[in-house]
Length: 433
Image: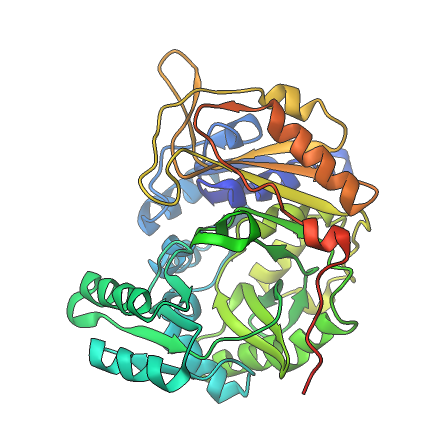
């Protein structure tokens, strides 16, 4: 197949890497990326096209005569890139702009969940700071405040500091002017889990669960980030969790979207909290999550191209059951100096080849760039994902951190406790009341 992947990050590199590893009928795919990054460029041809420009992406698909377009990030999806590609006559993996509002608006997602009977946190949609204050007082601490729109994974604040919650709400409202809205939710206890569910607008096929780490520092301290690491599988998760997600959450949501005339085809990211009152949805996203995609796709043994094409062409009902490696996989994110605040770009990156020489380790690029003289440098907040597979979770962690230690990036930071509690057997799901 000739496949075009749209996006620039480690999520897109993970997709390209998985596709590049396939050898259907002994022949490799012809892979293209727009605009991609230097790491993706090792496995796909790069094209300097704006990922958010639907007309430009569609024109590139026409020029290349691709068999499938995969839209990775949320911003192009909300901007209607998938619509433009489909209108040009190409199969596209990713929802329409209307369906992508499941991520583009937290308030819209809550409305869909209510109509579909999906279990989630109680919430108030607020348009003024006075409404926010009243909602905070109604729910009590810990306070959960979410920017209604896209915020690159950093639009959520969970804090016991009421003033900090109010300040986040004030900034979110001001940033969007008259259209400003925030969602204030009741806090959900219990560990969080990510489950990706592939849909073709009618059928749903779940992938294996993962757990990510959103705070910048060890022990879940510091501000939220886009994600500092992840691992899969989750041996501590309740039996039947994936079936429950399909039956109570994903299928009802897909059915409700179809009923509204906005069928959802692509990947529905279901962020869950396993609470004392049962499984609850924390959030929906309309695309693969980063950093979880890196570990989930590393375990997928069914060719990814078959899954993506089946979603894009309405064929998930005929897809054979997915096959998975039982081996644990760990992702440790290497971030640049200052992340998640003002980051420092331009620092030279070394040691990737040494890390990838380790057994079971590969490195995916996110915020990287090449200088005029060919040096690889940091060019974003999250710079690299170091992915490691092992016979046990401990072995996967050891290999991942051995790989991180070989990478040189001045001022870089990473968490040292990715998957540590799981490896020690210290994660417990609250007893359901």
